[in-house]
Length: 154
Image 1 (cartoon, rainbow, N blue to C red):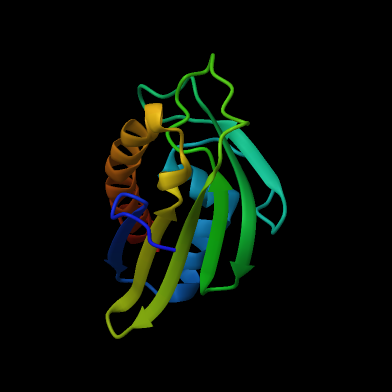
Image 2: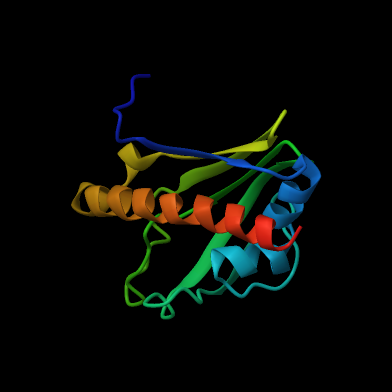
């Protein structure tokens, strides 16, 4: 299957910390919430849905909802969600979800974190471009947020 260049967002960042530390920042819901700016309780686990209010300024009216797909300790973490679901009056549940994947690779300088969100070509046409653009900007900020968080909380 051929996909367009707008079907996926890819970001990566070098974090000068051990892979174990970056993994904890990604998968411990308290730490994840601190850098992602969301208040969630419970634990990330494959097959589990987790949600909580977004704390990011300007987006406090949104609830984060994700369903965890895979967790391979210190290597791979993925979830599904409805991208750029920012209108609290709209029901996005009937729309296809996108897949967010975090890949951790040990490198001499620390950990290379790759974030990929794919599946935008399946999002309804009337909001596809806005979802892609919004999440492209969002992931650019979030990779900086996790790097900064891990640096400040070794």
